[in-house]
Image (cartoon, rainbow, N blue to C red; front, side, top):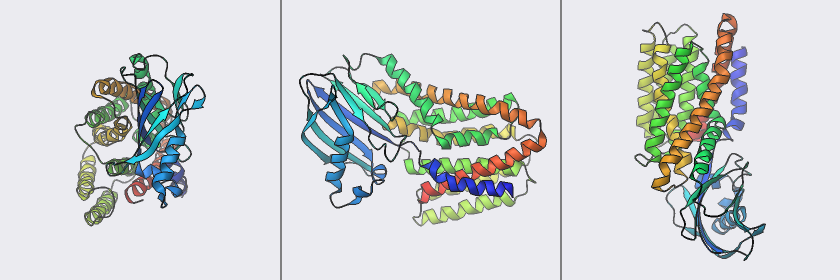
Length: 393
C-alpha cells in the first residue's frame, strides 16, 4: 500500500520535474566596430510554450520578443535595431531570426539574455561572437549568468572556455532530473564497490561514445525520440529493480514486452514520436534480458551491460546541448572534452553522495527492501510519465 501511494504521489509531481528539462537556443554575432549582425535560432517546440506565439501575427510578435530579450548593450544602453528582426527560412522544428544593430559610440559592448527564462528557467543560450574579424569565441548564458562583457579580443581565453564547458557539463547532469533518476535506479540495489564501479564505467563509456559521434556530426538523432527513450530507460531499470526484489516470475517481463509491442504497432500506424522498430527492438531486448537474468546468480554481472546500452541513449540526450552551440570544427574537441569531463564530475559527485548511504542501508535487510521497493516505485512512475509525455504529449 505504501509503495502504491508513493508511486501515485510521484506521478502527480512528475509534471513539475519534467518542466525543468534543459532547453537551448543559439545566436551568432558578427560585430564590426559599433555595428552588429545577429542571427538567433530557437526550437519551435520551445516557442509553442507562449500562447501568443500561435496567433496570426506570430512572426512579428516572436521577432519582437527575441530582440527584446536578447540584447547587445554598450555599457548599460541597449543597442538599437537598424534593420529587422526578420524571420529566415529554417529546417523543420526550428525558428531563425536575423536583425542588425547600431550601438552608441562609448561603453563596453556586452551581450545580455533572458530568452525563454520565464517559461524554462533552466534554459541555456549559446552565443558565438566574431568581432572585427578576430578569432570567434563562445559563451553559455543562463539564468545564473545572463550577461557577457566583450573585453578585448573575444577569442583570447581558450582556457576560460574549457572551464565554462566543464561547468556546463556539471550543471547539465545535476540539473537533469531524468539522468539523475536513471543513476539512482541503478544504485538502489546497492552492491559492493566493484559493482558500482562497473555500473558507472558502463554508463560512462556508453554516453561518451554517443555524445562524441553525435556532436562530431556522424549521426543526427531525433531529439524528441531520444528524450522519450531516456524516460523509457528509467522505467525499465526501475522495473528490473522491482522484479529482482520479488519472485522473479515471467509476469513482469511479458507485461513489459507486450506493452512495448502494442506501442510499436501503434507507432507503425503513425502514433507517437518513437519509431516502431525501436519500440519493437526494446520489447525483444527486455524479454531476452529478463530471461538471461534468471540464469545468473548475481544480477551485478549483467547490470553493467544495461548501464552501457542505456548510456548510449543518454549520450544522445547530452549531445543536444553541444549540438545547439553550432561550434566550428576547431572548437568541437575542447568543448566536447570539457563538457564530458563536467558530466563525469557531476555523475561521480552524485554516486559519492548516494552510494555510501545505500550501502549502509543494505546492511539492514528490511530497511533496504523497503528502500528498493519505494524508491523503485517512485522512479518507475517518473520514467513512465517522462516517456508518455515526451512520446505522446
